[in-house]
Image 1 (cartoon, rainbow, N blue to C red):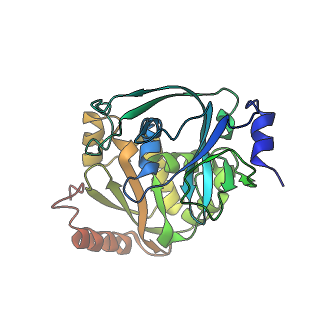
Image 2: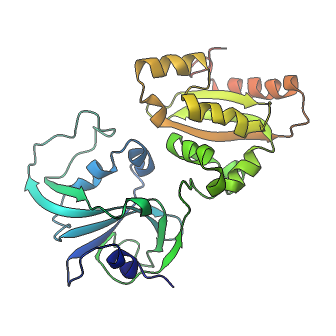
Image 3: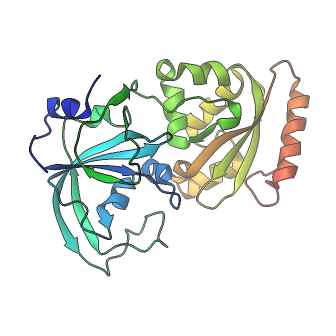
Length: 279
């Protein structure tokens, strides 16, 4: 068994009584994966309503299913200021959220970057205790570099744009994704989580859905006119895209049969009238 303390101390985290806290971020109200994709999770965690980061160092995790947690980063706590009137940065996604009065100055420590998004621990039964002093934790696994997430079946596919890019560009670390998505045609959905607008598309060429999604990982818009226009106005817009599969179809179907399924879903979801489909 690999122990979290053993791993962190071997990488240079100072040892000592009540120096370091562990935090597991999870929220039913805010999309923390989306914040992480926009590189704003540090902003989120730096603001607190209570003085919970009364420590020298902070080891931050994102919560996952079954009381698991994946490493987000290791920080030095440089200080804290109290300012109840301080607003969020102008580009922060959740401007309507009321910030707390405490603002922590957190700085990432060197030597841990290559472990981010890879180290998975079992947080335990006390998942509600989201911040705790550093203690022994079993490292369940250290994921390969570039790992996106576990493939749980076509109906469970829900990828952020960042995860899509990780999956596409790191085939060795995401073999099951490449095997599964490359074996089927289908109808897929892109949702702009910023405003809820949707784009329905289909894949019927070489490598099936995987082949089509590679173009989105490369360009952000995949050649679609309204998505391209959106990215021309805001080059960062793709960071808000979420990818899912509406229906997996056999590659033996003709192009016209697949396009017929695509048209049906466009009508069901109203993505022409109220979404990002031009036709």
